[in-house]
Length: 233
Ligand SMILES: [Mg+2]
Image (cartoon, rainbow, N blue to C red):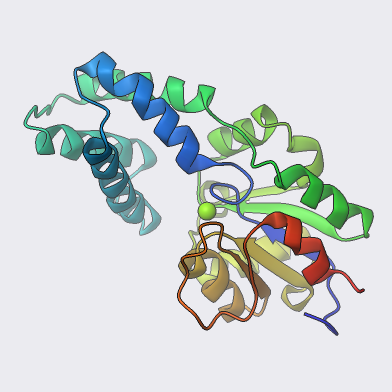
């Protein structure tokens, strides 16, 4: 990205700064046995599948955040042959998962050094996340990145969700930076890279597992590689 005059780095949170997948995995290992479910690979894959389906409905504005939590658990239990239609019961069960998920939050080891290096170089940082304000700011505080992350823009407060390019435009507007001086960094090519570019930002795909399809020019496998890509040599 040489020759690009950057002022700010807009980072995704889950899967980028916070190891969401590991936190979900650790939570499921502890929580599933408490509801009588074997935490094997099949049930964990099932959870991931229903999670993505219901988060997608939330991103599309079709359901509230609480409704996606209920829907996720309702589909999960139905698929296991133990259906539950009682919202109160679903909320109680989900709170057990949530507690263990929160206890498992951790930053990727490369997150803090990368944020520090970017800021030392004079660039600003901010977080743009498809999440609810209370939970996402709690995550940053818990994983010790609140001081380094900069402003936090959530889908909930912006009223816009990735992959709508307008979410990037609005975050830049609130941040006071021109889109062409900002680079979006995130683990989802469809949510963090393509819509950011559509909004006039630069973008870098953080492909931690190294499984992204070919063709992306700005791809890194770790946030450790981000400063070298963004900063003048
Ligand atoms: Mg992400």
